[in-house]
Image (tube, rainbow, N blue to C red; front, top):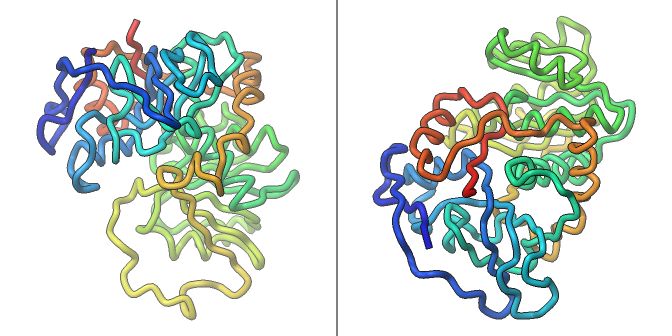
Length: 326
């Protein structure tokens, strides 16, 4: 099979198209013929070496057809999406014509959307849904702030929050991106200079729940943004991986404020966080109907993977990008 491998840790140019033996599905696994895969910042971190030693073939999600399912539960040719399950991290991932995935991380889908559209949804929407309705327990009528909203995950969270009936505030560092977030349904857009708590206080904004995709660099500020009994969930590291220096819960965590973390790469598809909890078919139906704006912003061919990573790292995606194999 054709596959893209990390030839050495480094920039996008280390991604190389090569031939590898076809994988075989073992017990508890499903072999998927990949038709398209989404691009994620996690894959850039793995490629660069930021996450240490990882599998040779990157890729944490895909859409495709069942090639073989040793259990017999899914027939060959069934349309599926596969998410995480160690792909790209502890086992070869989806940047390939074939990938073997733990069965718990493969979901049959009824949608007839094109492959590129199917591949734009799984990781970001499963993560956003889990963080918003699991960690944050978002309720209709509440005010949600999405920090890092122009990212693919951020846009998914804005979409889901708006559809749920929340009043959604979205942040961006670039004022030119405000119109994009307003089109998604954000009530207002805040320009993030790292001091959102000051801006929220100036506007008199009461935030019930905050999804932080920027991460450790703004954690203290995010905790200060929400009101009494507010909830903060950190689900990304767009600002970098450095830990929060000298974090002191007594000084930095306001009384009554709840802080949680959702690390999709480590838990989605496990017994505690089954993919059956995420209504993917309902999400796809809303994408198909145009109720959720989740179609890819750019589509690349398999042999354009280096350019795709360059665009992603330059922050020019402004949404979800995918690679198709047909």
